[in-house]
Length: 135
Image 1 (cartoon, rainbow, N blue to C red):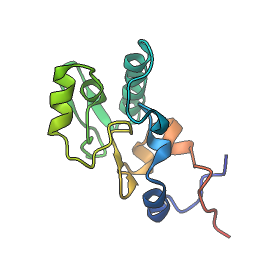
Image 2 (cartoon, rainbow, N blue to C red):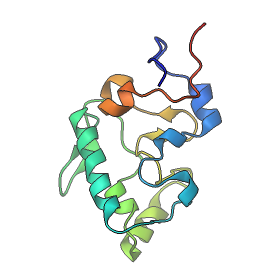
Image 3 (cartoon, helix red, strand yellow):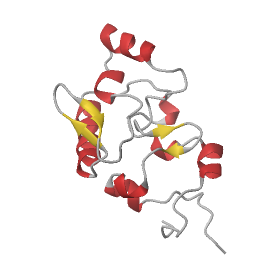
């Protein structure tokens, strides 16, 4: 894994790539289909814990909102991945450009909306293999 560069963002790269490393909830090659038995709800909870730990999110049974970074999440994966009529209705309310396969903070044009210090630890430390290191 490349070292985290001193420049904290590469919006052109993220736009060009489409944020495939941000496909947290369902892999790009699964085309957004829920594949598997029972793993997704636990995995969603893991990511909600990570994002709460970084102060990016406030999550309770009844509340789901921006944390200390002040960045509103684009979707609630607890609802956007429900394989029910309720989930379908929720997905229908989202803007067409929101990709629920991806992290709730992944914008299709610019990548992660969170400042690096508010990202989950794994995201704060990760740099994709396409990252162009300074020369």
